[in-house]
Image (cartoon, rainbow over all chains, first blue to last red; front, side, top):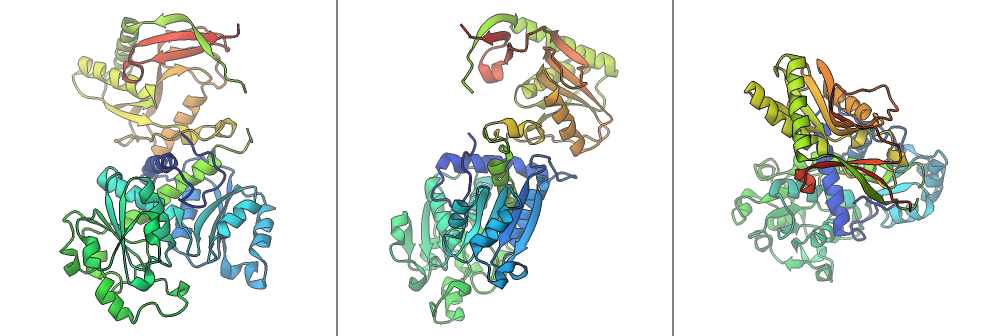
Amino acid sequence: MGLTRKDLLDIRSLEAGEIQTILDSAASMKEIASREIKKVPALRGKTVVNLFLEPSTRTRTSFEIAGKWLSADVINVSGSSSSVTKGETLVDTARNIEAMSPDCVVIRHAASGAAHMLARTLRCSVVNAGDGMHEHPTQALLDLLTIRDKRGHLEGLSVAIVGDIAHSRVARSNIAGMRKMGMSVTVAGPPTLIPPGVEELGVKVARRLEDALRDVDVIMMLRLQHERMAGHFVPSLREYSRLYGLTLEKLRGARDDVLIMHPGPVNRGIEMAPEVADGPYSVILDQVANGVAVRMAILYLLIGGRGAEA
Amino acid sequence: MPAVTFREKAQVLDEPGIDRALTRIAHEIVERLGGTEGLALVGIRTRGVSLARRIAVRLQGIEGRPVAVGALDITLYRDDLSLKNGTPVLRGTDIPFPVSDRTIVLIDDVLYTGRTIRAALDAIIDLGRPRMIQLAVLVDRGHRELPIRADYVGKNLPTARREAVQVLLREHDGQDRVVIQEPDDA
């Protein structure tokens, strides 16, 4: 089964079978990273525009490498260097880019819904690389790929997602993806950072970090999203870290083979102690490596088969 | 495009026929290359891989040593991606040995236009610089569109373009046979 949609905007609207297809394709793409010549001609002559209007290193670099390994031409437009600073609206910027006939626009934007709006405006494919507090679908897909690689399957696994759930698009996309793949999810964090009604997404809520960690297969730590916080959500970073920071000591209550994940960037010493981030349970760098494979798969599945409209 | 259905016109190889063809190809490889030193077989997914494994068993029987076998997925190298409706599923390349300085025998079930082999050559060469690449196919049905020919052929099978050749193998189809099909126009 292929992917028959024009855009990849969120996990919410994907079916489990589509997620499976993306993960299987990504698994095939991983072989290319091990080659001496890391390039295949699949997207030769295709143009991918990375429109990143919010800071990003990992995701932008990852999309750029993914496109280049598939032989696409990748152009990066970042917020600070673009006409956006001269007052151009997002739709105008996008229409101007579209006039140059790209095959795909990858958008990162601080406003929730920005990718959906672009997708309605543009004829080319649109990939959401993170929109405000809404979704970050490629992050969830690379997380699922990492878990599947390490455990061999997804169904029946349990995950604790810890930290700033309220402002996290990573949490939102992961909860949607994990539930679709038959996994159980517990969220934990300060009550001010757990969105009311989160249970409706099919997750359990734990008050204490220690309760969330017990018996889970995966612990996913999140960063405090200071840039999205309007007001005071935690009394102090120190208190947050003491209650919700993952340390070796708190890990003693977890399973011996637990996987520890973090979407990055890690604030060492706040949500995660350095010994944990660099420790044997940590798969943080596997996540980054899998990010390239997942984005290759998505670009290939969205724009690889088209060109001549059938 | 309306779906074309095919009906079987003739069976051209049965199970013993396929066995004999693969045994002959194995002997020809040993004779032509003077042994299996430095040799690796690379099957083109999907059925080429099964044929490569079967030939490898025979080569080991003749020469008494194992021969490396790899699997090649040429999807990312195809020149007809844009003509397809939707994207073909990737099944991955798995070549667990360096190809540089090896003699590679590419193996596929049917040789037709030659475009698959053109893609496979590009894919192999991206992995390194083999000493030599040869081609073995179970069936050569003609109608080449590129200057490509097979070094080892199980059966030469003159066909019309409108016909289809289907290789059925135990590993995928539960039976071993090769059939010619023709469009069911009537």
